[in-house]
Image (cartoon, helix red, strand yellow):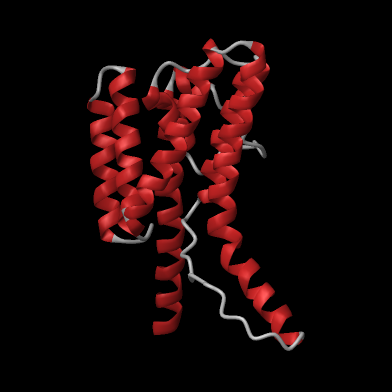
Length: 213
């Protein structure tokens, strides 16, 4: 779904109206989470399950860290981060690594047929993976309490962009404000989307007018 398309305009309008129609913050968060997955699914619905798995991993780790004793906490942290980094490394570097190994072996005169899978890189995988890791690390360090709501964690992790002026994705450094009130963050995001569409459309119209002259 392109930002400059009729489909996106309809999708944005529907989400915007439904968002303001919801009276409770919890309902808004659920709506925005579902809308985010729908938007992502338009690109490739299969990778929604990957993002959901990363979210489940972070949520489960947070819950276990809240109950675990000191000795088990490090193991839980390592397991959760290990799962996330394994997923990220597989999708980003598996084909790259095997291609370089095959090229090196070819230079050495060794013929090797390695299983290069030509993996499609999921959009935003680095962003939501490190968002998930940041939450688990902050719970482990005691900077934040484990979040009891799965929807809140899903809404935090699926956000690919950060707030204005923020260059990190640490859960404890301000992003956790989203858990208290999703309204201001998401309305800002909607306004920025509308502004982006308007700027691109205006540029296109200006180019069309100059071309016609």
